[in-house]
Amino acid sequence: MLRSSHRHQTSSELCRLTNQEAAASAASFPKEDAAVHDNKQTLTLDGQLYAFADLPPVGHDALASIQFVEARLQQLRGEMAVSQTAHVAYARALKAELAKTPGAALSTMPSP
Image (tube, rainbow, N blue to C red; front, side, top):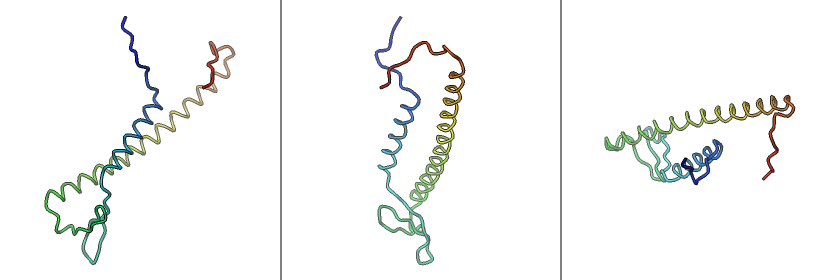
């Protein structure tokens, strides 16, 4: 039987890793802000102001992709929050149920 030499990550460790990676990834992308300036639609990217009308087609496509990805990230953040809330609720319910069952614990783990 083969045994893995690395330990398995818990779901909360994976969530932390995922959140750290997402934060690092988001920090590497430029910040943009769309606005209306002097009756023209504009885009501010890294402190520089650009008129939408002056963007090349590739720029419009890139902006649309950024907006799509930001909306998806927001949706995923919401799903993550719901999942984390459910995780906590299920763990509490399990703990409460196990507390009703005398002798259910095989042993007590030392606290870290």
